Image 1: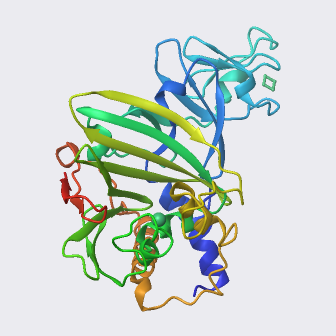
Image 2: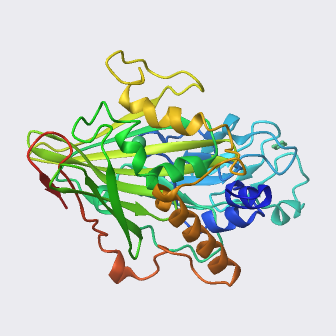
Image 3: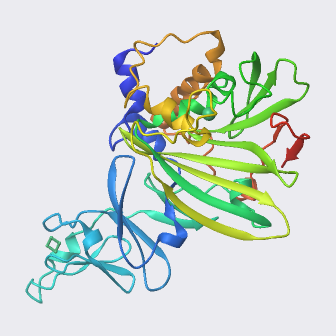
Length: 373
Ligand code: FES
Ligand SMILES: [Fe+2]
């Protein structure tokens, strides 16, 4: 269990909170590259309202949502060159958030020079746009293997989880749910005893799972603070490589960006967009143990702990080592930031960021084992 104060420390993500400070040390997806256009769009990340657009030079811009004048949301404005103009009185902001025009002010006024909106570093990578809301200098954007590959078919999809980010993150290291929540999907280990080990890595931790009666191991990776890399069932004999960014939106909602990649002769980047995800509404599947389609099972499990799980009431058991490990790593991350150090997985060295390869493989799908680099 966690005391109420400790639960709040780990779950609150807004500006000025300890966890908000830790999570701001990482780049987070802010949208699909294909969907970022000259039409500004609003979004929330880490409890901050933002506006995202693409300038005439093709580069994205990310800044605070509300105009510094009288607070109108800038997604109702319009893009002019690389700048964004507020629709109310026409103040114009450049991509760095500087106010460069205030049309109603006297010509000699220098008032605009003292106005600046928060503006944030943005990068496009692997079909996604990433934003960095933390202190300067921004670290490098990690080149995770699945994200950097283009020698096959890659699909990008996002789905909301109507709950706090920590439940969504803890679902990664909650290993034993695989045999129960997804038991009907993976008959090889449904309702069987699982055993597992965790090994810490430079990016998080690696999980080696064994299933009673199954010879091979299932290996997946937790990438600090809330990402994971794992194999999915093979298509045409090739394991599908999956990577998930579990993104804190605000204290009560999260976005789950799922990237699937399968190497092969055919090459494509498919942006599948956002799937519906209403709280309490899960796609039914009659043949499943729980009557819920596989792709909504995890969402049900994390949402139905409550919008913010009351961890004072939980009873962690011996098989919850993964949850304890994740919380311990978060505590270490909080301590690192408080001490002025980079937390785990922040990359500043180009040499270690060529491509970050994760060791994952599986034999749980009822097909010959495949290895996925
Ligand atoms: S509110 Fe934006 S220019 Fe006045
Ligand atoms: Fe799951």
